[in-house]
Length: 215
Image (cartoon, rainbow, N blue to C red; front, side, top):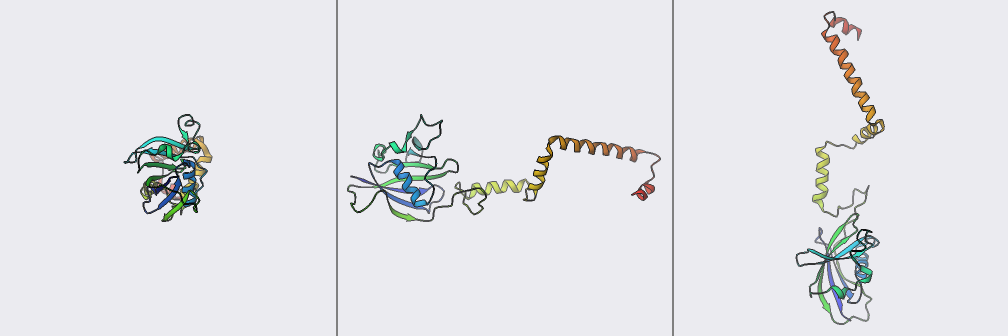
């Protein structure tokens, strides 16, 4: 029984590397689960491997928990043995984990071992280097954006350009509760006040000093 050694790297985090040894007759689901035993991520997320070119261009898709829209157009990981998709001794697969908050990986076959070690249970984590980034979750400011720092920074810059500050949320919520009709009513009241103000300012009988005394 041949053993495939795959080198797995995050597309946006080059210093995080995993090497996994797995039997040629095991499935892509076995590899999917092995990857996330090594990262600590929840494997029960919609994910896909793609047969890839040397330049990481995606080809045929091999899916886990595909959406209803894709079910009839992809093959499933649990039904797909690795050996059926190895056409090159350095075969590459592009892998996307968790389409809701995706991480992208490069998966490359780096070695084929002809005989399995009877003392090893496969899949086997042969090498682990670097800490997997934290999953991006809402209300978790310490989490790392899987798209990389540049994407996170662009969102931050957008908020700065809008002069957004946390205190603005209270005002926005208050405006939302008032509704659009309330806003229109306020505008009408302001316009009426302006009209009265103009009348007083244009009146020949208006006394500035007496006006000040009244107030």
